[in-house]
Image (cartoon, rainbow, N blue to C red):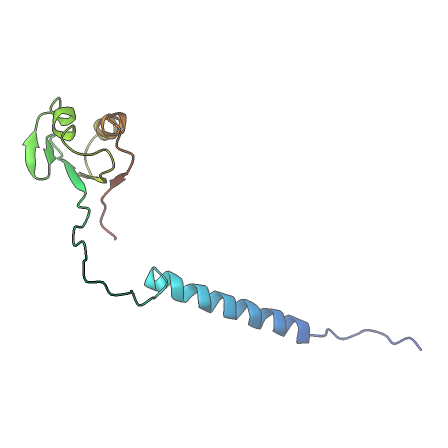
Length: 124
């Protein structure tokens, strides 16, 4: 009693697709909020200190600023030596800045021991 298979059974395909849809919708919720939503516990003593990153600005003319204070190119190491190495450093560079100058500043900052170096950009 052999039967010829001339149809495709789509029920397992639908089951798999529904499971994948549930997985995608669940992970999309975490991605859109950026974190898992939780209600934090309350405490009487709270440390309100936020870790403020060091802002290094590199202008189109090649001038350097640390937290909006002008510094010379050679003075970057001196200015950064006052800050702990665990501090985050955000580099803001003009879009027409020479890549070589930008890479030189990043190398100098990383050479001083700062490991959290990031670039600030605008979302287009």
